[in-house]
Image: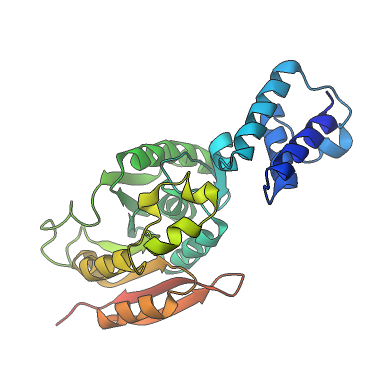
Amino acid sequence: MTYRECYTYGLDVLSKAGIADARIDARLLLEFVCKTSQHDLLLHGNREVDETELAIYKECIARRSQRIPLQHITGEQSFMGFDFTVNEHVLVPRQDTELLVEEALKVLKPGMRILDMCTGSGCILLSLLALSQGCEGVGADISKEALQVACQNHLGVSEQCGKELAVTFVESDLFAVWKGTYASAGDSHAFDVIVSNPPYIASAVIETLEPEVRLHEPIGALDGTADGLYFYRKIVTDCKAFLKKGGALLFEIGHDQGVAVSELMKEAGFTGVTVKQDYAGLDRVVHGYYEEEA
């Protein structure tokens, strides 16, 4: 079977399975298996694909037709210019989340200390450390399996950016592991910046999500309980003990949560609270600054 015939086969199977991005996924899987680029379909479409690659490609197409996420098949996803390892234990990094990184970079200064709460794959924190100067970070997550993926990504991103990233990953139910550690927000070990992309989908909405998300991504990283705001409330309340004076808190939010999360932060004493829209014009990031209470 030629390279082009393989692509046609994959496109046909995925189209019949109702995969919305059948053309893209058929091509990307073919490139993944054959270690080729997007130009090969046009330039080298008549070359024969060997039997081993053909068998692997057909297996990949079969898995994708069962609505297994493309990234779980390839085992990777690009984010902020870096390749991240992903599997069923972490959320697949989304392009929308890059806005959170971009906004956090605007407030980061060399040598700052960052906490990434609900770190998952570590894509947010590792990107911030790779793209800033002399910063150090801690990534926290309740999932041991997610933290194992984050540790793999630490090695991978360090290699890709050409510098050893100063990062520690810790297993913690939100701030549980730190409670009682810091005497005050002025402690030298407190954080200058806290970022978080917490679970924020309302429980009742989970069943309406695409099968790729609903069936194959970790429910604990998606479910924000009844109204989707549980983790925002907890983080906004508890983070004040671990933020330095003037420290920044930045959240990714659902498109309809801008007002609610902004109010939570204002009520907790945060100033300069701002909602940032993504490239689709939807509310995506909320951030503000915390001044110590008198």
